[in-house]
View (cartoon, rainbow, N blue to C red):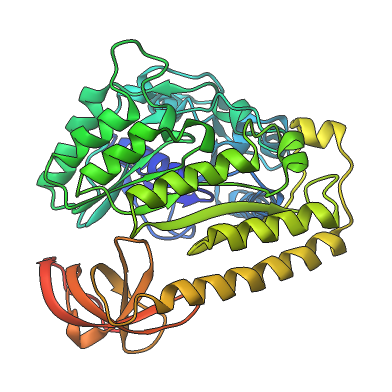
Length: 440
């Protein structure tokens, strides 16, 4: 039997897809690269914004036609599967197996069933499962905490993934040790709010303590996603500063620069607190690379509110930013209680914010020209004749392909910068990988 997995959404979904892929392999299934080759197609979904939901709807329509033609088995998992919206799609498009984010370990049982199988429970054993290392990978994700206790009015994640539950540190360290032995040189610790790690379990280390533990395991690069400004405490900053393996890249979502909008979002902090965290981070980590998330056009956002977001962007001077138009999501308080802004207003504001982002990203990237950085080369770039990787600050870096013929860590001198890319030349290899890169 052959299976194909299609993944939408965040790194947590990528990790979950790897988890279920390893389950399938252990059950004797062969993983294939296309729907046409597969007997079973499993779609891992995202429900944070409307666009990925529409992509899933379109895909399920295509899969239903394929099922009518040749009897395909269809599965739906992830955040959308946990919601009424996703379950209605599942009924409409003939989905056979539906699993919520907390029920991934039910897959073997689902495949044995001779009828439709739905499981939306939050099973504790999903925290205990340690997937095998991905084959040939130099970087990998490790989930340390699932769920979220914050209830931002725009966000569906607390509904789809439940409250915060930390994994046992022994399991985390065991998984990382396995990845290290498999040749992985970069680990990203994952959670909806990694800063809260351990708070739900007496006796567990704090997130700062976990960072120190993981940073001492011999993995060259350790990253983490995602943080919440309320929980980004001084001990976390100190742990990063004192642990060389922890990369100096911090993603700290702000969402808005307006206190009035932050209050409507139920973000639990205000502009002054956020800027104080940024000040503390920069004091301890002068070479830090900062990125953020910003939602444009949240219900009730005025032009004055938006100007406050632009001014905060200037005050922080972000290296990178992920910017989104507000997307109403059924089941959230904002969807229920707030009236959406006209789309043309949101689009126009997003364009202004993008211009601000380009200006700052270019300015920040120019500061790296002439410097030597460590780049993890992972594959062939879209640009002909180049391979692409990223440095310890998460900057995308392009290198002439002949200078880095295999994946791995390279010492690179940055020669040129654009708002979104750095271009460099190899001055030394640190940990080259064993797998030749395909010819572009």
